[in-house]
Image (cartoon, rainbow, N blue to C red; front, side, top):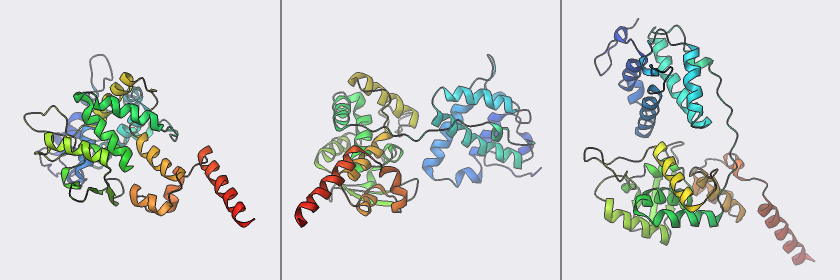
Amino acid sequence: MPESVGEMGIKPKEIKTIGQMVEYYLHSPQFLALRPRSQKDYEYVLNRALQTPVSVSKAFESIRIAKVSVSDCKIVYQSWLQKGKRMANNTATVLSVVFNMAEELELLASNPMRRVKKAKQEVRRVMWSRDQVKLFLDTAYSQYKWRSIGLIVHMAYEFAQRVGDMRLLEWKCIDFDTKRLDLVQSKRRAEVHIPINASLLAMLLEQHNDFGFQEYVVPNVRPINGSYRPYNEFEVSILVNEVKTEAGLPKELTAMDMRRTAITEMVEAGVDTTQIMAVSGHNSPQSMRPYIKHTFKSANNALARRDSYKNEVS
């Protein structure tokens, strides 16, 4: 077994439980090489996974790393599924990274999470109507406790960006003089430069008056030990559901659907694909294919243009 020592001072041979293995991983060079956003997401996911019960009196973190079984992993995976397929699969993927490291350190004979069959995630087609977007934002902005989540969703919609990038957005990305967003996307590292419209600019200025003294555009309004932090994915989901319930909006709508909604609106408006890519950050027309879907509005626009052309040449 390798005798490397993590930053926290633990040698691999001293690791006894899954909890200790996760702690070792969180101080490893592999983890520290991840982008800051990925580090925060991984840490949140792993800490949540460790608390998952495998029996009435035992949490997943307390299982001995050498004894963790496929059965244990299936039990906790089924528990994660109650929060949704995406959450369960993401958690299994991140935990598998930790178990792969344990395998390399010869603490595990093999990674048991690899033998857990993940639930198939169907491609989401859900989109918000413009009336639903307006109702959500009106409801969120009507109460201070929801203003932050309203702004995250507002930016995701207007900028056609991922909710993850918007919840972690920093003030240095907002240029109030030129009224634009300058962002390097976390997923593909694409650079986008997007103008800020008047309604969103007004909300950002109001937010800056209250929270411009720290780095995040939308920090959690409740600081921890005097330090502000961004909302995590779970907190965003909870707050979005609160606003939806208050507004009487359908349960199937999610904040993550906003990017798809915004891009599809541009497609249906007849915006050129390369121009949409300048906003969305997609690197090729092929990557835009999921958004160029066969909708009635797109078909209606196409036929209307054809009829107009026929009238011109007749």
